[in-house]
Amino acid sequence: MTAILANPVPQHLEDLPRNDHLQYGVLPWRIGRQGGLRILLITDRDGNGWGVPKGWPVEGRVPFMSAALDAFEEAGIIGDIDPRPLTDYGYSRLGDDGSRLACRVTLFAMRVRGTLLHWKERGERQRRWFDASEAADRLANIELARFVRKLTAHPQPLTDASGRLAIAGGA
Image 1 (cartoon, rainbow, N blue to C red):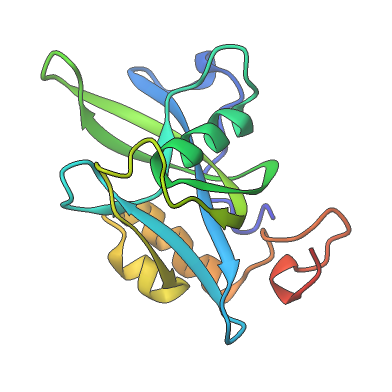
Image 2 (cartoon, rainbow, N blue to C red):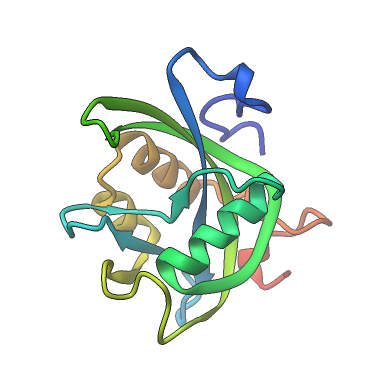
């Protein structure tokens, strides 16, 4: 897993670079009918860019459960989430006061087991499955797109507890 990890993942808020705001997210994936890796992307609220479900830490929840909750609310998905961080990436967003916030997202792999027909942010976002290389092309965040391209070629981070590739039918 460490060979593909883009950056060290901050373990605590105090480990973040100054002015960075920590978020948690998921990389939702499944195996398609033809056996290839598929990635689920969602649009941002204004519909201009594709990304992955992410959000702020939820008090009292471990990081991967905060990420799973955001995936449920933003994309209407449920599945098996790996508690080990997959990677992290940075982006900039507008704060409530109009200032730019530097954010760092710790990403967890989620093998999607089901999608809901009705979910909290259904009216605000679209969701769509892409093959992994097309997902990388659609992602608005360059750093995340680069990681997905590496993952397409080397899917080792998507392994089960025994080390078997989950995308090869293991988990």
